[in-house]
Length: 505
Ligand code: B12
Image (cartoon, protein in one colour):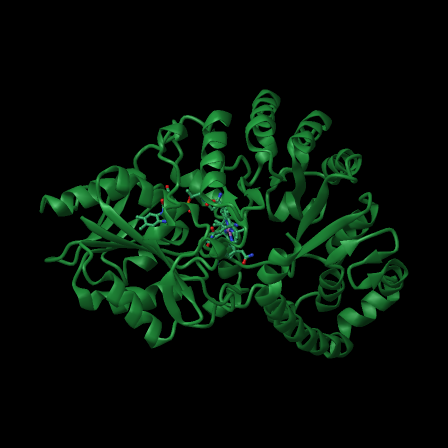
């Protein structure tokens, strides 16, 4: 069969759609993927000309698959509506479909909940053999005659991840949206980087994250919470990618908690990586499972960057996010990592603009950040209430989310002023934390000198500014302007990034 897959992710790595493509190819189908890389301002829609091109590329397909995040769901609906004119079966999968199938089925007659590999292969087979699709596990189907919705249960999770084929990087079969045109995917569209997952699942079930829902969806349907590809599988896959793309400069291992792997596994991975790959890589760790031995091995194997999730203050982590992590866990991990500061850059992630925070929570988080050994990079992320997560449900029940826009899902993720304004609470402290984003040294926190933070956090000043928000709002409007300018500069430097990289080579 001819199958078209469409990814609405704004980054073209999308391991989900690429895995779906590989299993379909393995089952003998011809697959093309369209990557709709587009603005991270999620209130923006695809222009009609783009929809026409998507329709044109999909017109000979026997089956069309599309995926989305919560934030790109409105764009997915736009595409689905357009493609309905072709009168071909369309299936909507991915994280948003998994979490909100009842919303997706309103727009699309087939929705894939959870892991899609086996479901899509069965679906394609059923369509090819003109058999009913109503009983395929993981699929919600709107019956074509009765319009009744059939909700099939999810099947067990795939235990042996190594049984999966490598993700599909046959870029000759891929298209990407570039300046309003769907063009053939080029190696340069990877920007020298590949996001890569070496396992599935997360032991945490933080209330702001979709993993909590996945953990619930698969209760009793899996043998283990964390499933890993073997080090051998990952290395073979990486070698394959390295051979295909000479412009790759690093691998970005994006497992939520790569450091949960056992010491033995990390040892084996690092041994093979050093011996066979020899290219720098990045990964994520979590404070609880970082150990001196693991970090040493990773650094020796070529790990140059690590991201550590702090998220919130100890109370917020415990009571609001239900994330089992203390400030001491963070400090211990940061001390270990700091020993390797000459070779390993570290970025700490925090979440801000959480309306459930009390002023002292934000102050405690800032104080924790001041205790972490320097240098490091601070990434400040504004909280988005993703549909159906526990935090979203709580905020909805308690009136914080009255209309969908209050969830912040359709805001430009990087527009800090917009997030702070939307959430309204603790604007002054959220502004300070957002301004601390960037390189942290002994004397500076992003834009702010250390002494200024202490000055701004003076108890009386905090009280005054939390009550009277006018000075904060004035600064916020400047931040907005500087963000726009920064975005424009970033776009310009992006254009020149490749020629500069080639010149420097
Ligand atoms: C790697 C990653 C990234 C990478 C790469 C993203 C990319 N486009 O490739 C980066 C760092 C760039 C990133 C960015 C963001 N991410 Co992210 N990311 C992840 C992460 C850690 C892994 C995703 C992944 O590859 N999973 C592995 C694959 C195999 O699983 P999968 O994608 O779910 O696919 C399976 C099924 O969903 C299904 N399926 C998928 N597609 C399709 C299609 C069809 C047709 C079918 C039938 C089935 C199907 O089958 C697949 C195989 O079983 C997840 C968390 C997680 N552990 O999943 C968060 C996650 C997806 N990200 C999330 C978010 C919010 C973001 C951002 C919006 C945050 C931001 N900074 O703006 C951005 C936006 C990215 C964008 N618009 O493209 C959220 C999404 C929440 C939601 N409900 O929408 C997640 C779930 C984490 C969370 N906090 O809850 N992300």
